[in-house]
Image (cartoon, rainbow, N blue to C red):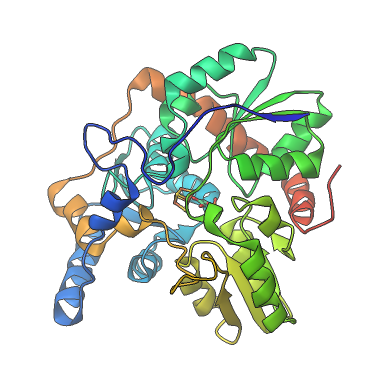
Length: 375
Ligand code: 13P
Ligand code: SF4
């Protein structure tokens, strides 16, 4: 059984919080200026020096600016999907972590490593899924379904994770829910309705879905994608499962950001249509320079720009923000200890599962290929 909670969430213009930076227009307004030439070189050199002096590691998501991704790799840090970001931050010996991504990624790092100081270039870089799943509303939803195992997506606040049995990312959600279904568990899922629907379809699990969505992936258009596919009949279509069902249904491969990169690197096709945030193209181009990458359409007929899938909150990460973390200790993440301890349980459970069951994870990766279910 699948059902949805009736809840109206204004994704484009969520209510402002006291800090006044939750709507997408304000997020774009906070996008840092691109640095160039000698100024950029000087900032990068200073960051490299301070990362060593302050015993800090830079961890970045595939959607942030390419210069930041390169810097993370060059300095012995890491660029990855949200699952591997959490694991890297936990296992790295540095005393300080700089997390370039969105708020939930910094919070996950702090929850897992309370002994480390965790900083972010801009603490107001959030996520529509997190914004659309407020902790008190979620508590009310949970209270209505006490018999269900609570599974939340990584893209949630620490306060929501503190109420969950399991945290999952798009890399491991299918394997974990499949396992829970085998154990006879009924699931309460939040917040991404598209990912939840996809997992439900693939596993056949009994899931109640929260009505949240990613403002970036929700915009991909199936009709336009079909026209693009007709123009590129040999292209392989890669879709992140936060996208609408009609778009997922057209995919050759549905998977996390790391699964999409793997598909481009290992795929035999020459052309790839990519339905996710366009920040990922930077790493794809580096790892597969001979492949042709085409952005999936995020706008309809009359639009002047057909492909502009970029997260306004990921775009708030800049080199100057990273330097501020290191020079001024700005953007530090703090989480109340009782909330942190409660939230730790569901993240640890996910990390243990993914470490101890690589076989189930690999099986589920096949499940992420269209029309091959795991059940
Ligand atoms: P991944 O876990 O696939 O990196 O996705 C994170 C995210 O925010 C996608 O929009
Ligand atoms: Fe959230 Fe979507 Fe941005 Fe990912 S791309 S951080 S899911 S708003």
